[in-house]
Length: 216
Image 1 (spheres, rainbow, N blue to C red):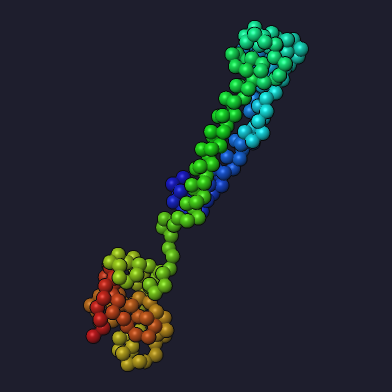
Image 2 (image 1 turned 120 degrees about the vertical axis):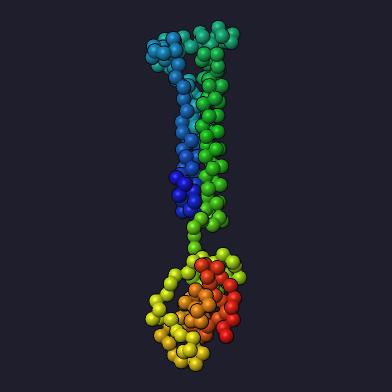
């Protein structure tokens, strides 16, 4: 999981998942069932609430006996015979209150998932990924610029491919003369010296630390 959060692609994927969860809870139908005694199906009724994006209140009864029971229950609980479905009383709450509670739960989950998804998607689009390597113009191997004291460790080049100091100073052709890269320092004062494709430069490196030392 930590790898997903540490990369742009991972954060984008998690953001899409959170966005999908948001949509699901916005469209998820909500309902609650009731019965005479609270745990059997006898005399059952179901309050259907629609979804967060399409709210409605429908009281659905198993049969006429169940309808009469809840009609009388509502009348004696709140002193009216409810003609509207949203006014039926179920265990102390009318149907509208039942739906508001059910949809409120779905709404809160959708909001939470939407916020998390939005943060992850924005982070994946504008934030850099850990461990990424982007080449910087003018810096060998796409690493830290020469002015930085924390250049990354440099690979050891093949000795046969590097030009010699004598060949470079005399203007002689070399197989790698056109290739700008790091080579072991031909003067032996440092581990590496940078060849810019035409001549040796003052950029040198020791144990990954880049500094300047002019060529004598």
